[in-house]
Image (cartoon, rainbow, N blue to C red; front, side, top):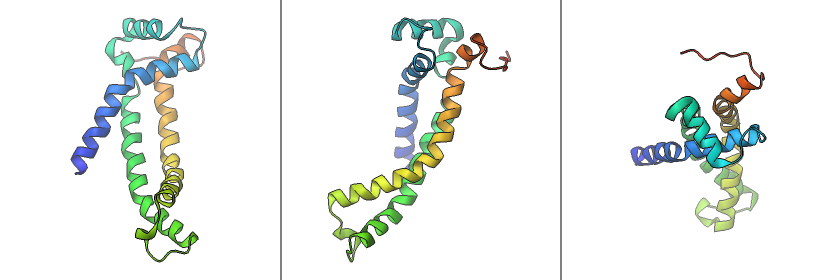
Amino acid sequence: MWLVCGSGGVACVLSGHPFDTVKVKMQTFPGMYRGFVDCSVRTYRQDGLHGLYQGTMPALVANVAENAVLFACYGFCQQLTRTLYGLERVSDLSDLQNATAGSFASVFSSLVLCPTELVKCRMQALHEMKVTGKTSLHRQV
């Protein structure tokens, strides 16, 4: 079961990451690109496929960490919700109450997701940050 869930998370990150990279570059430097296709093509020409997958490792770590925290905290949040509504058993929670417990659990997952997302976004926009002088990092070849 865990292997299937983990594989699904990896597949999701790998299939969507190039789109996320282009989105981050366009949001961070809106005047630098004419549109999605321009950003995609220029990124590919500058850095190849690697450029579109820049920041993949933090995204994978974030995906694993987010799901781990959600699974770990969801049961606790169900118990908290059960207590708040004065119910005897978790099985007595309605769909809306279970959704409330899931929302509470997502607060905890954001604590691990936000720092890794910041690292991922900075890695994705590293080339543009160097071009505009917003970083002193130099690429090592």
